[in-house]
Image 1 (cartoon, rainbow, N blue to C red):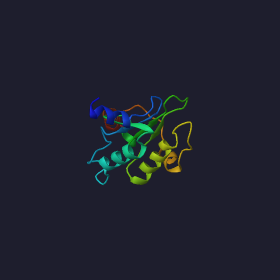
Image 2 (cartoon, helix red, strand yellow; image 1 turned 180 degrees about the vertical axis):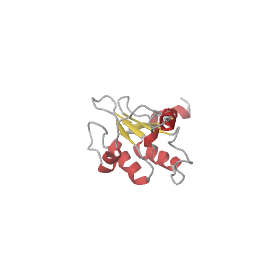
Image 3 (cartoon, helix red, strand yellow; image 1 turned 90 degrees about the horizontal axis):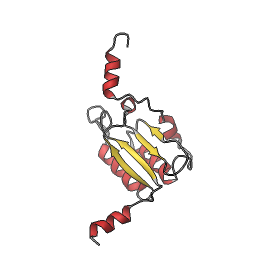
Length: 139
């Protein structure tokens, strides 16, 4: 077996493991909107900290631009709702999310207060839709 396949197998997580979606499109991951945020460092920390507990998947856009930077913890085979967290722009909140994931995530672990305060329900409006809405008279 090729060396690369062995490494991939070692990094693999169970099929029913959590998935962590990290938005890096639109306003999320934007150096213009968030110039003081180490986007690459926070993503790297997430991947390293939850390795073996969850899959971390960067996303081009999660259509929740008004809450940037957005991270969604999606339960595996559990009967729980995903946890949508906005404003993940610092190490403290990122670390709290990592610990939540390592502890089992939605339906298993208690939601840290830092995450609970930034939790939201997605409106399903993206940046372009929000720009149009903001440009309408009376907005």
